[in-house]
Length: 329
Image (cartoon, rainbow, N blue to C red; front, side):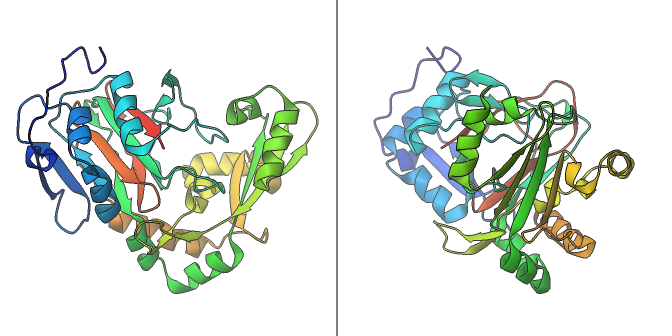
């Protein structure tokens, strides 16, 4: 039995009567759903509430399910599949993750003392998940929050001149695999076959260049913004600020620049025409994200459902053991 071995609670009344919906905090569209009965299983509530959770996701962009019976990895996969359909695998990876069960993964496995900047999942590609699911298995002793931010509000905050430059030129992501400083191409593309990599890159419009040894350089020009399929609002949707070498701590950035030529950095971002990003543009983008950040402490059993186009997410540094699972549809 998934869901930590607890029997599911049978629902005989309206699914909408079994939860309370309230704003997570002032000034944000994000809402929190809490059950009105003890030990309610979120899967059974979802089955009995029709399209309620989908409506909340579409309208508010992000929904926190809190106070339901905790789910294990298999139960979490059942919940995500029941709402969003078949789970997605994680290909063209940019961060290290571990497959926990089926297509449920750990959240990004960066060192605990590092911040993961706010971003929309896989917005560095031409194909991304529509919905993300996060499940808190073990909250950190201190810190470790997953901040969220409204992508339309970020778009509105980014200076107009910066928006114009990015929308006109797009973003070029340059990655160099095989230098031992980042993911290998084998891990990123989940294959040992160079032919598979070439085929994937052709399909997605990625320029791939095999270098000496086991090295691969890719260049991919994609969108800076999109119109959300659900809200129909224009949203900021790229990872230029995260991929750019200036996202690293100052000392690390200096070492990287001294160690690698501009086109040999493990990862970097440019305007779509290949010209360097303006530091003032990056500063304005990061300020927009910071101004819209929403945070709350994780509790065991929490599940967050977000529309990946409407909301960005990240991770704060933490201490102690922390376990957060991710699924994508």
